[in-house]
Image (tube, rainbow, N blue to C red; front, side, top):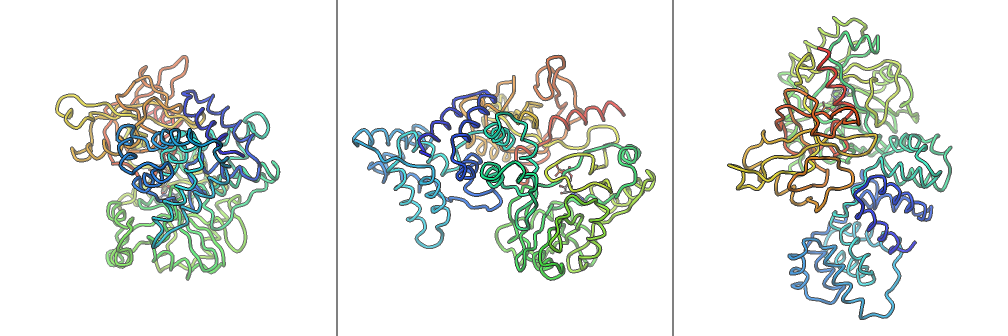
Length: 579
Ligand code: ATP
């Protein structure tokens, strides 16, 4: 496949502001891609080189790319920098300079998708001494052969600003349409994706093999499984009414970790499926030593724990273990304990479809406890009063609440449903549970805050069905002056000239931003409002947050699609009015 054809599709995606059009363009792109290369196109659309959990990054700073552009187009670095100041987009700089240069050539070389992808891969893989020069020259080489439009997208990809604005659900719908002409394969694609977190691999299976091979898809230790999530209810009575006799566990407030043992290796994945094994050497050690099976996958919540006082430390203390430096020192000072709550694979067998009841027995049998590994505290009951007592007990010891789990349910990879139900303090009545919103724009302030150029955020929640972000609140409080400034500078890096296709909002902020950052907000209430698009239908107005205030800075553990969903907002609104 010629790369110029890919670049033309990207150009069309960039031009559209309609989600449905984007879906059509993508499905045509996938149809035209040779089956054996479909994974590469998928990764590029996800702005990755390999599946996200492999964390393979090109790692080229803007300065380095500027040098590649200068070298490829035969102009001075000074000229590239000047143009960049003017255009603010290295993709446009490369496009323009390449136009000027290519007009001198008679027949530019034809680049293929593989040429471009391989150059990305090679660049990402070169590391260590001398790698800066190697990277600059690989990219200069490919840019030297690129047509202007190709150069634009190659450069944007390299610095992580491709910004096609397509989410995984749209990619999956488009794959389905490319394969059979409509979206009906979406569910099967998603199921396989949930089990391996590698949409490239799933697409390849679908296009090279067949639909049945997707249905037979199994988990593989070493590849993260998309995490199961919980619904909310407000009282123990409602929980028992909904799922009957169930396992009720403490809800620990730390890092959710999915740990894979693969022979002598241990890989630990975070809530958003990044591999972070290097951060937690003590957990890696314990899993290697105290889980006897050759291969295993367990899940748990890790918290800093004080052995002497038997106290669980607050989240703020646990959070300090998320670091890049002084890891060994900190792991001795503030060791983590992993409270294991699930087991998905052991002794060569996939247990994701087996009932929780059976997985609990397996956990009890196969994990040698102590040494930083504990089982999450759990009771099995059908008595609401017992749930309540357990709830009060764990709260008094600093836990966040409880999770009730259906005993006969398998592990719902990638799903949020009533197989798991969370109950936190404060669900009983007012809206004290926080909401995770995505920043979709900001409003330049008036009055005191005008000097910072940012006065309020426009925030949205995620509409899963449509793969879009819908407005729910304007947030003007909760940050210190420094944080507002920091936020503005982060948001300016992802600002957009026009509203992207995946955002639906009638309120027009001064600056639109790529839906990327999630913050936690508290509010007094969820109300109905004609101004916001979250949950709005032809007959009914949307939802809004009353008196919203930020409770956290940008959450590093959540992607935009992990924000609270419109469906959840609806349910929270109902819970509120039922009380
Ligand atoms: P929150 O922001 O409330 O942590 P979330 O969106 O990350 O929510 P939920 O589905 O609402 O996820 O709640 C499940 C989360 O609770 C898990 O992601 C995990 O980090 C944490 N957790 C703590 N204890 C348990 C447990 N015993 N079983 C499952 N998850 C637990």
